[in-house]
Length: 116
Image (cartoon, rainbow, N blue to C red):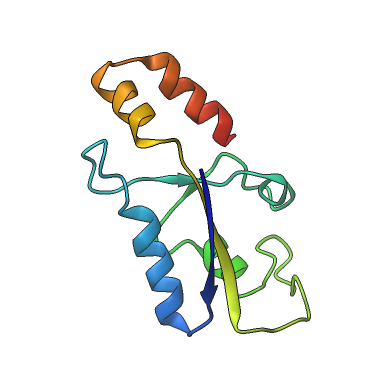
């Protein structure tokens, strides 16, 4: 499944919301915090691929504010009310339950491979 939603720019509150939302959504594993990783073409371009996204990260804040974290220059001249898009890929709950309750590492490995 894929869910995409707009995150409107509302100053520092929006940035704090994103950091809190992203790091507190791992209810299935029982962990209180999850650690995100930079993925995708821009992660490669910004030399972040595979690195952990940490709370208070300068890179996360820079990208959120439209600044290239490597060169410290503007990524785009355009300004708008949309800060970013929150895209979430997820597998059906039945697959997650099978992976966790059945302790099937193959399913878990495929989920991580698909994210990369």
